[in-house]
Image 1 (spheres, rainbow, N blue to C red):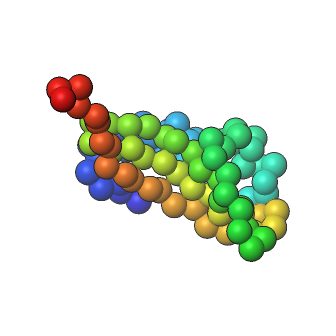
Image 2: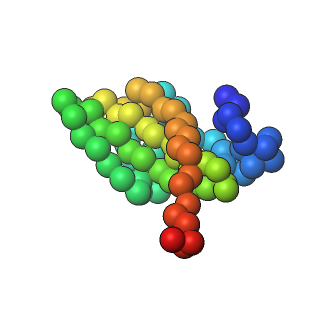
Image 3: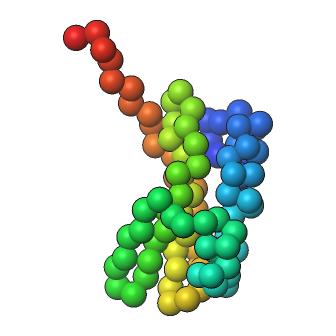
Amino acid sequence: MRLSGLHPFTAWRFRRRIRGGATEGMSREGVLAKLGAPQQQLSEEGRDIWLYDVGKTRKLDVSYAVLLEGDRVSATWWSERRSFKESSDV
């Protein structure tokens, strides 16, 4: 998967930071062993979403999400948000 707006080397570095990510069917323990504890956890209707902050560029904040249903990974995805820097010139 190509992350939009990122130089190929930056995308490679971000993928490397999460060690290739999680795969479908991986257990919670496997995700914790590979990626460590998530920076944020969300829960709804028996599902958990673990969010990992991967990195920032001048224009984007990139994160990686893992959806767990029960004890197994059912999906993963990358998220990109535009970075908003506050101006000190007020």
